[in-house]
Amino acid sequence: MEAFEAVYGVLPPRFREVDLSQVSELRLRAGQAPAVLIEQQERRLAGLVRPDELSEILRRATGNSLYACMDALRQGFVTLPGGHRVGVCGEAVQKDGQMAGFSAVSSLCIRLARDVRLDENRILPHLTGSSLILGPPGSGKTTLLRACIRALSQSGQRVCVSDERGEIAAMREGRPQFDLGPQTDVLSNLSKAEGMMLLLRAMGPQWIAADEITAQCDIVAMEQISYCGVKLLATAHAGSIEELHARPLYRSLLSLEIFKTAFVLRPDRSFCVEEVGR
Image (cartoon, rainbow, N blue to C red):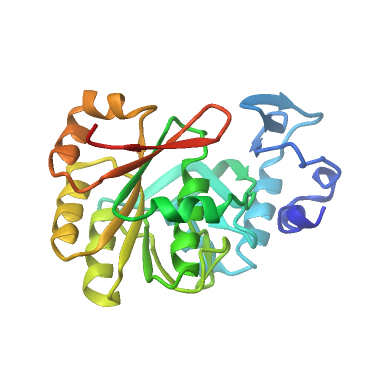
């Protein structure tokens, strides 16, 4: 299928018959049966994965570039055209106390990207000030965040994205694999806090967007940004505003009164908009 052409292109021939239409991940472990993840359940396929097949997939994913391969191994994944991601696991090598790559690759997790579109005309009227997106894992927080970024960018506002883990834009060769709008600048592979401050200094944003808030340094950076008149978009792992207030890290964030609005995702991936301070 055309949507998964880049994935089929890196797979050995015997895996190219697998129907990926309902698959969220393809997991390949040396010496084990390949498996597909469908609705959070792993389903095993026939045969066993050979170590040389893992090396071949990684070679194809990096375009036969040794430099690109080493760079990918340091960050733990390779991004394919279309935003699909090949996660790498194995025997890690450290140099000067930092991850330098792998001496052997033992498994790959190929995560399939789908550019799900939401109704941006419905979203935009609610983006009048800094906003949080709340939901549990797998609820669609990143999909909604992309829609918010795209809506703002298409409306003529400058949006900068601090994409620490590369999951928002899925950059490849300097271009985002997901459409984030015409007035969006993306900085990836730098910590959220560092990235947000760099974007504030260098890019003159009206909005700065980031993925999940996980540390106090993220909050310190957001506080400084808010003093500069720049609005913020971010996600948080919580099912409701009440859950936010119950967690020390998020209580610290809420006490600053930076965020006024929250998009709260429901189990069916719809959302409601609530006032944070209620």
